[in-house]
Length: 261
Image 1: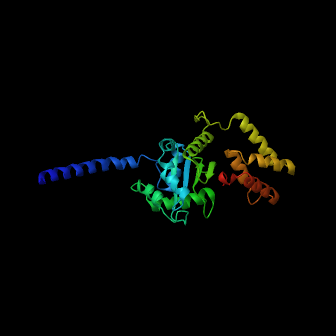
Image 2: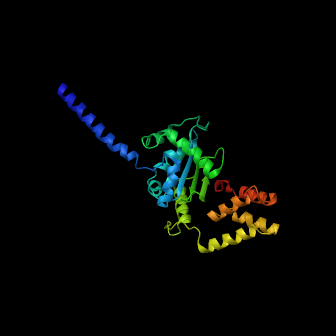
Image 3: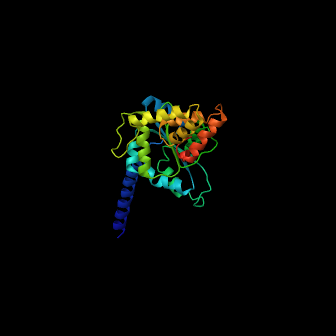
């Protein structure tokens, strides 16, 4: 009986050890989050890969679902290899689910040997200041940035489905490199679209106030890096106040808070 029990124990120990060793690498086959912000920027430049920043807050239901679902999606993981990825992980928030952090903390522990929670919180601070120049950010939020770090390709704030995130990733890659093959179901930035965007930007920057406001309203719903650049410029501190307010109003009316810094 004792020999049988010992045999069973040895078998279970062997099974646990073997499968534990197999399980550890599995956990690291997810998104390759970079632990150091500065080195991530260097890597992006060196390998000519755009940067994907995911701002996540602990203890809030929408953010928890991002960690528990989106970051484990096989298609998202696969496409993430085309980016240099940064998880900007804020430490604390009084969220809808009473401060529960089971999902996000559980997700972080799956790659804790590669990136620590402290490193992720440092990434959050550095990415927020560098790309958004903000004391705090709304989250969940995804920011896609040119490899050089100087240009925002695309931005989305608040919850979205895994399929929508996948589309955003494809769009960002296409904005960076038009040769990137888009899914057949995803139409974005045809030549006619770009011509229209350029015309709207010219009109929105014109001297006629009525024409300018109408064009501003239309251009604010266009998801393209040229539009982001234009609206950042139009809301700058050195811009005439009336024009600045026109841009802010157009962004608010069209829900562009989801897309624009």
